[in-house]
Image 1 (spheres, rainbow, N blue to C red):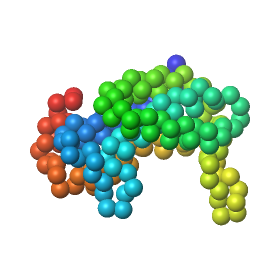
Image 2 (image 1 turned 45 degrees about the vertical axis):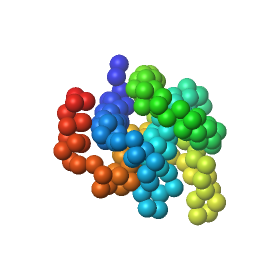
Image 3 (image 1 turned 135 degrees about the horizontal axis):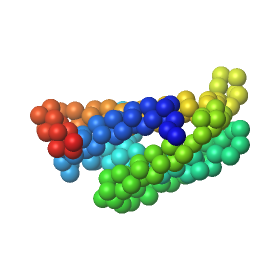
Length: 174
């Protein structure tokens, strides 16, 4: 039986992913090394990070077992995966659809009770206490994750891509 809460999140994530790859489809080779003013990552680094997140999300979901999940090891793993993706830039976009399919499959297998698990982030609040949230909140952030990177990529290539090219790429991906 499908979990409506997960299905809503997956729908949001699919829309965000579609918009991101529609933008990527119209980038030229020179765009991948551009970065927005004040951004530490290039377009290529943003895409490597996006690819890494899906792979690490699968591993995180597979590790759900108790009442709490510490994300620290997964975030370190995400950075290693991002660096791996940078080493093989051609494989990033090619591997993305499969990685997303696996995430969708894993998330659909979650029981509704698991969405209440506490996820501990590697951060501290103003009182030095660990920051945590329920898995459902974390997954809501995950669902909108691609939109943040799409915005950063748009900013990096802001004057280089015409709206007509974006519309054509979006139409061709449907």
